[in-house]
Image 1 (cartoon, rainbow, N blue to C red):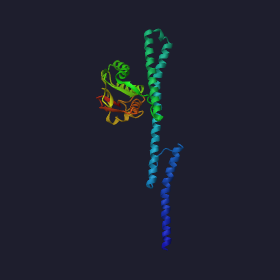
Image 2: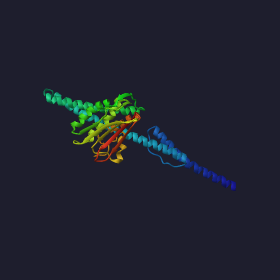
Image 3: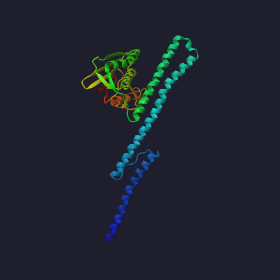
Amino acid sequence: MVLGAGLILSLLLGTTLAFSISRPVREVTEAIYGLATEQRREPVQERGPEEIRSQARAVNFLVEQLHSLETSRRQLLANVVHELGRPLGALRSAIHALGKGAADDPALLRDLERGMDEETSRLQYLLDELASLYDKSMGGLELDRKPVQAAGWLRGVLIPWKAAAEEKHIQWQEEIPESLPSISMDEVRMAQVVGNLLSNAIKYTPPGGAMHISASADQKTFTLKVRDTGAGVHVEEHEKIFLPFYRGDTGRRIKQGMGLGLTIARDLVTAHGGELRLESTPGAGSEFTVSIPL
């Protein structure tokens, strides 16, 4: 009798354990199949033995990543449509004006030509950002590194941005010592980094504000600083602004464009073995620092 009771108890215990394990295993299995067939993207409950809970956590992590990727994809599409719409609309208006006789007015023709050139430049900038994002998604950024004399290169890169700042009535200051050493870098890619930082500073610095660009080097590191007197960045956004598509809340600094410029800048600096940092206080401007090992 005791043996029979023990067998019955063992059977009941085994059945209970089997059901308690099989249900979470089945749920995890169904979730994995749902992810593979794109039929389900919902998290599963983490229950059962530790091994099963560990698998459930892994599935939930994948679900979270897929939701994040889908959100980024939708945001990218919306941003592309928005950013393409403005320059294309301006170009179409200029074409219509030319068709209605604007070409007969030399002054108006010059204004239209300048405006069309600016809009096509914006389109080119957008394409460059998307190309850099594609390079990153393919597993890395290819660099054409070679020795570059930093002082002469940097002064050349700054010329058009200085003109843009002065056109907006922003005071421009730069400190570029002739003694800067030669740096091994991809000068086209690093020019893109500088351009992204300066474009950001000009965009968010009001007329009457100031920008200060300085470069220095020691025995190990080349350092570039871009400081502005714009709106500044809140502490909680200091890392977020380097995330793809992040443009900040309404009324804050990072709220225009594709939200890729700073992401690409940091990726390119990192690809050079360097670091891009931000120091900022709301209402007191921002300072971005690029450090590249020599």
